[in-house]
Length: 555
Image 1 (spheres, rainbow, N blue to C red):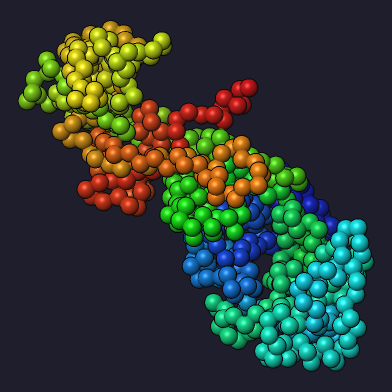
Image 2 (image 1 turned 180 degrees about the vertical axis):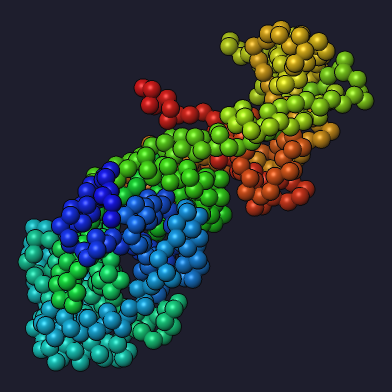
C-alpha cells in the first residue's frame, strides 16, 4: 500500500508496524467495541472517528463489536442506538455487526486451555475477600487458599459453574499470575463470574460470563484485529491484555495502544451519571438536547460534519486534558454559516403598529437566503401595518450605547423601512403591550432614500402571517466551574438549562421539514425538532451567534 504520512503518535506506531512487517500484507484492522448498556456520548464520538478513520486512511477494516458480557445492564435498544450513531457520523463497519457473545464458546475453550496450562484456577473467596487479599500499592497481595487446586479439580469446578450448580458469588475463575506484582491489575484478576441472568442474545444458555479484561483481548484475537485502540485508563491493563494472549494460537496478535479520552467543559460522560439524569427525570430522555450523548447532540441540531471536524481539530494526544465547549460550538458555526438559510424570528414578541402605513396595504420585501452562499437565492417576506419586533430591541429609557428602538428614536427594519417610535402603550399593570410608530416611505431598501443612515437595524415578523412556534433555548446542565465539593452531582444541575419561549417566525418557516437547520437572524442557529406539528413548529437552539472560541484564539 501507499505510505501514509502520520499525523499523530498512533499512526506513527502503525507505520512502524507496517515497516517492520508485523502483520502480513501490511494489513490494518481496527474495531469499535462499545458496551450496549447505555447511549454513546461525545467521548465515544472521538473513538468512533479515530478507529473508523484509521480504517479508512490505511484502506483497512474496522469492526463494530458489542461488548455484551454483562446481561444485567444490556438492552437491544442500546444496540440499535449505537448502530444509528455510528452511521450518522458517516461510517460503516466491516460485514455484520459483531458481539462478544458470538465468541462465548471459544472464550470458554480458551479459559479451559489456560486452566490446563496451570494459568487459571477456580476460587471460592467472596468479592470482599478477593479485594482484601489483593492488597494495595504499598502492600503485596496474599495468595488465595484455593490457588493451588489441581488442573483436574479446576476443570471440573469450572464445568460445574457453567452448568449452573453454584450461586452468584459462590465461585469465580481467576488468572494465576502474581499476587506480589507491582501492577495490581496483574494480581490474579477475575476472568469469569457467575450471573444467573438472561442475556439479550443468548437467553439462558450461559450463567457464567467473562470479565472485560479477558473478553476484550480474546475477541480482538478471534477477529484478528491488528491495533486495539483504547483510552488511557486501560494503560495499566495492557500487560494483562498481552498476558491473556500469550497462549493464543496465532502468530499475529493484536496490540493495544492507548490515547487520551475526550473531556469537554460542562459535559459529564459517566454512564452512571447519565443514566441517573434520565431515570430521575432531570432530562426528558437519552436524546434530550442537553445531554452529551450523540443522540442528544444530534437532536440539538449538530451535524456529523461538525462533530467530525471537532474530533479532527482536537487531535489524538497521550495525556488527558479538557477541551473547551466553545471549540465544539465554533465547529458547528463554521459548518452552518455557509449552508443554513437565514430566516427572521422573534423569540419574545413586542407588537408595533405603523400608524401612517395604510391598513390594507401589503408589500413583499426581498431578503437573501444566505449571504455566504451566492447560489442560495432570495425569498419574499410580507410587510404590513402591524409587525412584531424583539422585546429586547426596545428600551423606554435607553442606556448608553443602546442603538435600538426607544421613544423618539429611529431604526431600520431589515430590508424594509426606517421607523420612529412615537408612543408607548401600556396595560394597567404598567407593562408595555404595544409601540405606535411611524415609517418613512422614502427609505425602503433599494430606493434612493435608503441611503439615510441610522445606527440600529432590527429583524421583524409580520403579525398577519406570523408562524407561532415554540423555541427551546438550551444551556449546559452543569457550570464550567463545577468542582468536587462533596455534593451529589444532581444538586449542581443548573436551573436555567432549558428556557421555553412562545415565539413567532416569518411564513417561510413552514416550507422546511423536521430536521432542517437555519439561522434566525441575530438570534442563533436552530433546528426543527421532531416534536413539531403543522399547527406549531418546535425549534431547538443549536448555538448562539456569539463566537467565544474565536475570541479565545485572538487572545
